[in-house]
Amino acid sequence: MKKVEYRRQARAHKRGKMRRRFVLGTFCIAIITMASVSVSGLAQAFTEPVEEGNAVTGSALTEPEKAQANAIFTEPSPLAVPSPEPAPEEAPEDGALPASEAVEESYFDDAVFIGDSRTEGLITGTGLYNAVSYTHKGLMVDTVFTELIVNRGGVWISAMEALKYIDFSKVYVMFGINETGWPYNDVFIEKYGRIIDTIKEINPNAIIYVQQIIPVSESVSSSHSYIKNSKIEEFNRLIRDMAEEKQVCLLNPGSALCGGENFLPSEAALDGIHLNREYCALWLDYLKTHTYRQ
Image (cartoon, rainbow, N blue to C red; front, side, top):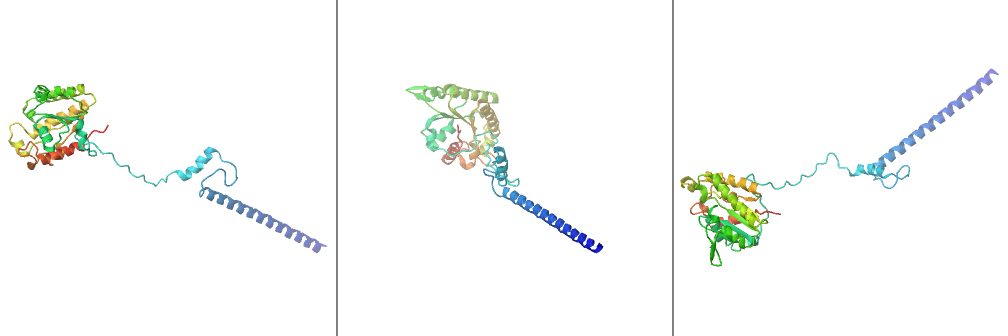
């Protein structure tokens, strides 16, 4: 009987052991299957954009959930380097207008040039006769109001008076070479400022271009009794400040005509002051490529 009982118990123990192995095996298979499904779903989430529903459950996503999921595919890589934007063209250090696209000579159809013999040479040397020219040899910032240089219907009037009787949209002004002999700089710039104020009173909408004084040659600067490039630079600093104060356009044609030492080249002018045709053309080219864009 003891042997029979022992064999029965042994068989029961063996059957229980087999059941435990079966249950444990089934549980392991279930765990592995669930892990595989989870990894597969996660991989799909990172390989396919989220559409209208959840890939695992099939339930609809809310709008915030869609936005959060799709952000994975729209955000730039943190390693991406944005392309640099082209830097805007900077104005020259002297405050003059920066270079711009060249205009045609028709741009000067409604322009007035006011100045001394240098500006007179610009008009005749380039044939810029479509512009109005109120110029005269020896004209200065004070005599521009008094010297009778414009013939209007047989009556001679000053350049500033003549502005009242014409239509214009732009005014180019250059003075200073004749005034370098003046002892007081403040008188020069005060009278220059009066010119600008008068132009504004006559035509508040006109574009006013104030041109800095073009330097002279080294020979003239070193030998002339009062025309010196050092004095011209003093005046040009005053003109720069005035242009900023009056809110008008500043031009520096000398930057296109002079060498690195800021002298007018000897070949530019027979007398070292008044430009020849070749350099007048360069001056006009500068004006064409330095215009105010509204």
